[in-house]
Image 1 (cartoon, rainbow, N blue to C red):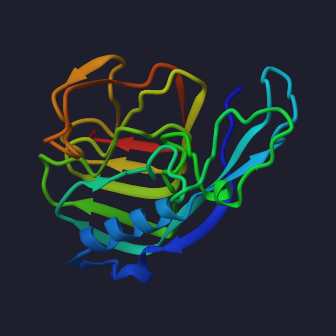
Image 2: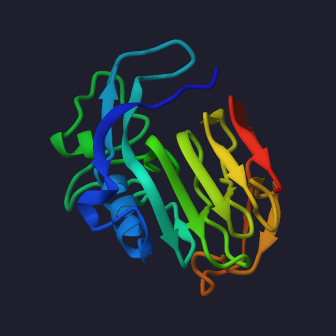
Length: 231
């Protein structure tokens, strides 16, 4: 069954210099907020060393952070990149095996380590009427190649090419939930999933990256109470 990550810390884009006035370019401030929120993701061991149904031992509950967008108009000039913390990013000298051995106890550093790729993408939440407006119709608004378990709510997106262009290389269950959002006036799609097994040379987020297979193999996309207009 699909699962949503547990709630983690909350961040506010205004605390990182975004203005929401529709005049200033808020791209850099929001990108900084996305990175800070992702880096706060907590991976908490649960049932460590204890056999569980379907597993040899316990696993992790990921406390996913939330990035808040207060009411306003956020002007964008570049694509916002959804980037998760590195997989298995334990602290220096920390041994954080997965799956853990039966009877083992987790090192302290594993409470913020060993994240499955895609679990560290912060949830996005609009508070009031929060509109993100892309001024370049050839650019996506959000782009992410490791988006697996993710929640977006209460945002309005205007302009750009694809407004959410997302995918992952996941072969296990995943859930992307989009609710109470508005998608308007894009040159492409409001939500564009990167096709499974696409062979890409580099990536839009990092053109210098080596060619790789990529695309969601078993991720469920659920869209609820949302509007699509001219996209």
